[in-house]
Image (tube, rainbow, N blue to C red; front, side):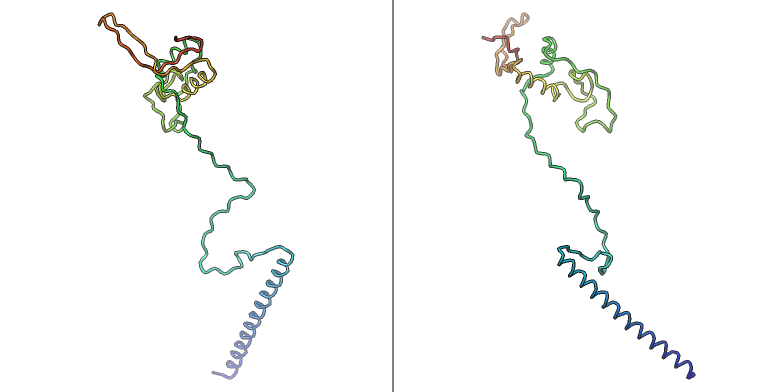
Length: 190
């Protein structure tokens, strides 16, 4: 090696060492400034943490998306106990209620597309109250609620265990049925 080359490589090494020392000094000065600023912010009552871009993490992990804090949380729905309706044959009761003009039938319902049907939808069943498919008349919640409302309003009376005698002319004997019956409130059974 020539002497000129050796001196220039020594100069380069010396320069690099000085730059490395300068970089270390600058890093320590920046850390001191950050620490001083954090102390000032704490003294003012404002906690400031370092942004995640300045912290050293060995393996960056995807953070879950933060929920927006400006929207109030939705209240949880309270569980309503299931409603127990009066046990009656609604398909027979519906005809009586319509004849006495206590209720009116709903208009025919259009056939819903598959994605709008409830999971309890039964295409082969027909509801006389709704005049369309979807569920049997005896399972119609809307009709059950309507009957319950009529009972609560006093327009109907619920008579459990009423005995009805039916005589058959063909068999020449009388059969007694024990039924739960709804009668208009104005009718006196005794």
